[in-house]
Amino acid sequence: MEHKKIVYVVVVVIILFSVLFLYEPIEKRKKAEYSGEVIKLPEPRLKGEMSVEEAIARRRSIRAYKNEPLTLEELSQLLWASQGITEEKRKFRSAPSAGATYPFEIYIVVGNVEGVKAGIYHYDPFEHTIALIEEGDFRKALQKAALDQEWVGKAAVDIILVAFYERTTNYYGERGYRYVHMEAGHIGENIYLEATALGLGTVAVGAFHDEQVAEVIGTDGVPLYIFPVGHVR
Ligand SMILES: Cc1cc2nc3c(=O)[nH]c(=O)nc-3n(C[C@H](O)[C@H](O)[C@H](O)COP(=O)(O)O)c2cc1C
Image 1 (cartoon, rainbow, N blue to C red):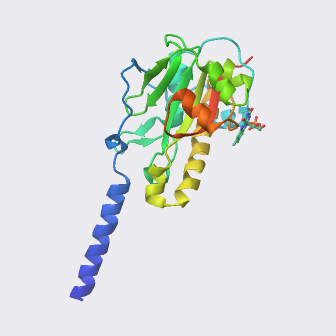
Image 2 (cartoon, rainbow, N blue to C red; image 1 turned 135 degrees about the horizontal axis):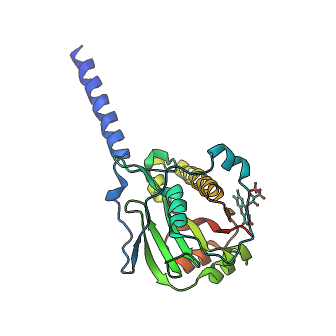
Image 3 (cartoon, rainbow, N blue to C red; image 1 turned 90 degrees about the vertical axis):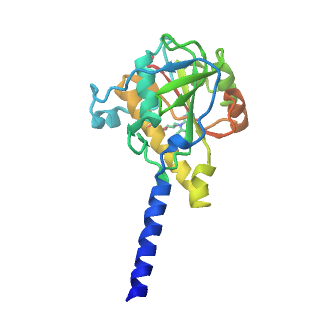
């Protein structure tokens, strides 16, 4: 009886420890450090004009954009929908993640956003800020890396989902790879629906040269998706 009790206590302690370890706030992870300018994004709006059902029904891949700027509010909504913090306590995010391992970093190539100079930026979900990595218009370079798909070069902003597989494979081994790909889908759909709800257009771009895209934005991770966003033409 005593022996059974000890085994029970040990099992409970192990389970508690693993749960706590798995859900450790991601804040402790190394954050990208940039010397460049940091822009605080407006607080995301949690109520919009369009229902989720309408956004699902209206969502389409849009590849033709006007040469019109996005507002900072619109950029804020899109980034929040992609990876924003939706539960402060545990730092959980807008899209689900296997074991809350959050393998993605979001980069943006800004071309035409009000009050934001053109450049490559990294999104920090914890602070809801973007940090400038390199100033300049990199949309055409990104378009070239994406098999010359012109919507990548014409978008007001390109949102790039960059995977750091080891965050998930360290916990789940080989199976972690499939989890990361599943998660790209969750994030991507959030971007699609948010863009639709804002009356903007986007398209999931998966066809590109990984190394070239990584080189343009200057990342060690693996780019899995580009979402060009702009006003629908
Ligand atoms: C994994 C994946 C990769 C895609 N890659 C591209 C791409 O490189 N370029 C592009 O123009 N569209 C791309 N698309 C968008 C599809 O062409 C589009 O979803 C499909 O034609 C259906 O249209 P809908 O999104 O309007 O429903 C991709 C979609 C997915 C899911």
